[in-house]
Image (cartoon, rainbow, N blue to C red; front, side, top):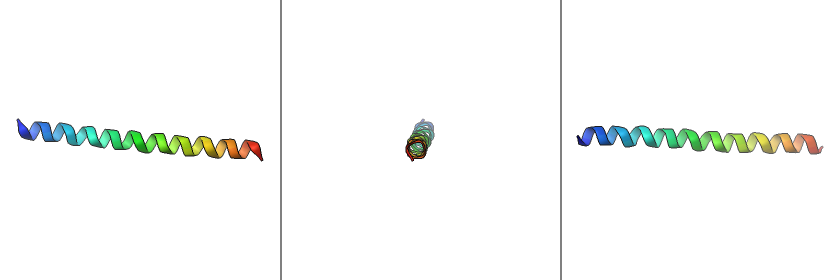
Length: 39
């Protein structure tokens, strides 16, 4: 039972980490687009 909980939270933390990386990457990408349009 404890093993299953650990695996669940481990998978959840990986998904959260990937989501955060995607969000940051998307923000950086949009910032670059705005800078390119401005110049």
